[in-house]
Length: 368
Image (tube, rainbow, N blue to C red; front, top):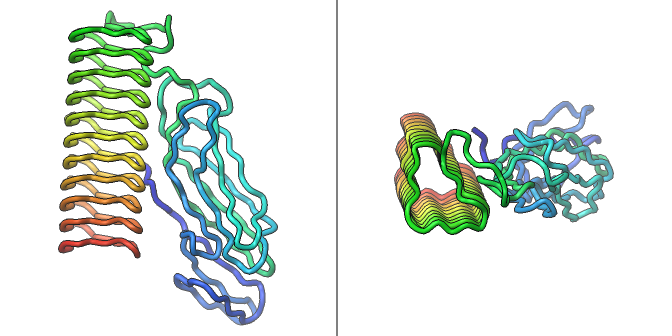
């Protein structure tokens, strides 16, 4: 499971004798005078080479998004810039544009777009690793700065069920076609798949998996013995109950609770109106919202700039993404990590260790 956080630090080498640089120093290690001075610098926008990740979403094949922003806080232009970008999955569907230079006090972005309209239908999520292998300015070299962000992309819109004429489940299940309105409930012993811009006004009850297409609507509850996958910009009016994993698309809405024996992954800018209870792990996307509490038998990770309205309880570790807000307590049988800028309005109680980043706020007590 990947984290929507910075995972590396850059080492700044000043290729001269004893030189003093003004600016924020996050810690340094002095070396022999004839070898210059080495300084350890953090991956924030105020570092000598500021590298800030950004959780993003590509909603169509023609959209381009920023996944990292680089700021040159040195006193000269960065004239050589070597950057590597890697994806945990879906690399064949995506292409990147990286800057080659950055002017003094300038800002450049690492961009990602779909390389064509192919790939799987519906929303996919990948972890993007941006590694600045070398940045060279006048007498200064910055190396090995690495950050990670979460990218949700939909290079082939259509979601479950596909466009008009698309195939349905292969186990005798039910298909609601793209643009179709199905009044009442849908009950099937197999899988249920709804297409793009479709609507079911009642509940969906399936003996297998349930998938809903992009921009689709289910007015009631979804109850599946297997997995539940909702498409981009989809809406479920009630609760989601599943025997296996639940994955919600970017900009999607679940009006009620999510209760599953498996794991839960919510998309970028998604919303869950109630609680999340999972037999596995819970991962929420960047800029997402869970109005209630999260309870997981595994680990819990919240994305950058996300919000949880109540308590988080996990049998494993808990990682709170930067700039996130947790409205209640955090209780973990493992470790707790709170990233930069996050706010915890309650207490933290961890059986393992607790790590609070600079700029994070814990308003209650810390035990662990």
